[in-house]
Length: 306
Image (cartoon, rainbow, N blue to C red; front, side, top):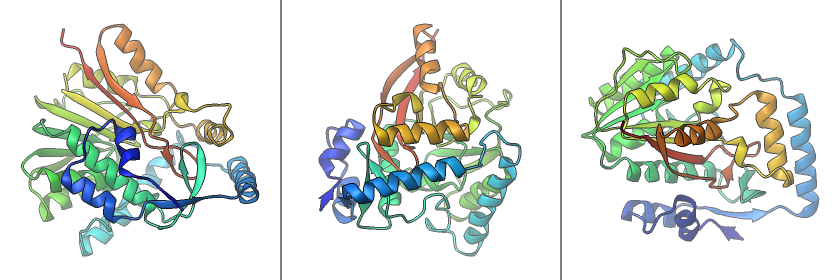
């Protein structure tokens, strides 16, 4: 039996130490796993190939907006009855016995393995955002990340923005039931509302939102630069960082491109850095992921003052 250790977390997120609450959480949650046998791995690879070949979802399809509207509506209806972490956990984070770690499929001992990894990432985001007075999550979805942030920083002003109304309804409910410092606004990242001005000393988060733009992220990035945000953190699948000579990575590349997830995001940020418009503070592949892809690579950047 293997496990993801505090040392692994240090390396993934370039930490020198863990805050007491995060260290305690990691020690008390089950992050153990087993590797698949060569026979089971081969079966899993074949099943994954079949799943990719039969997959018909297209991210850029006009029908996707209604899918997201309906999905977040399910979380909203649960939250009206009993607002809790469980009620706002995204439906795509499912209990699973298959996960990615270090370019291999693994079999977690706990069905809560992925949600525990997400909780660790949320705690790390909280560390990054400690000095900023305003936090904006674009593409906030079910508000799972906002909920974690407002628990850690109840005094900060936190904004949830999304392009579907059901998500904003959850933000408003969170503000009513948990913290009045939380508020929401409809916002289309493909066509940013430039009249919505971000506050000074602000941090911006996207978590699996850039991937949904199908490459139409340019206007959004320039919107952030124009608003002179203090720090931007993106937790996203970044196809450029996969190793196409690794079988498990190659399957993720196939899946990523077939669905039409965003390509070229990191490359464009690197171009903006060459043009001296931004500074890339850090980017790193954490090697965490679900069966089909790695969704937890991070990129951190800030605009350069001109």
